[in-house]
Length: 77
Image (cartoon, rainbow, N blue to C red; front, side, top):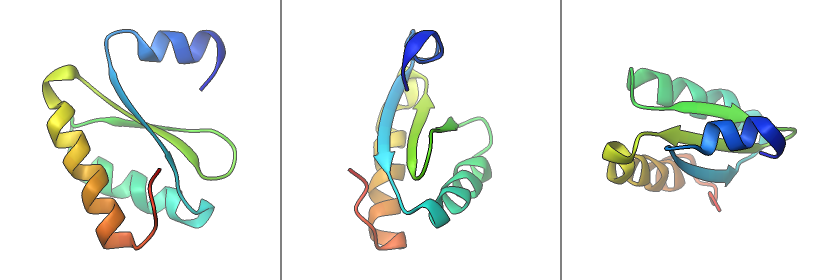
């Protein structure tokens, strides 16, 4: 994420940038939304996404990303 939007989003949030297959963006969004109030997904072009949450949920977000890597069989970088 670039520009003013990226700066506004980044202020005070934990962000994990991922590159996923374009067809899997909807799956990742659905899984994240299943954890109501846990975080937000922002998508750029293709499969470039940013998962954002509060600092108090950083460990949970990292666990979520690790689970995605193992469950969906792609490498979240």
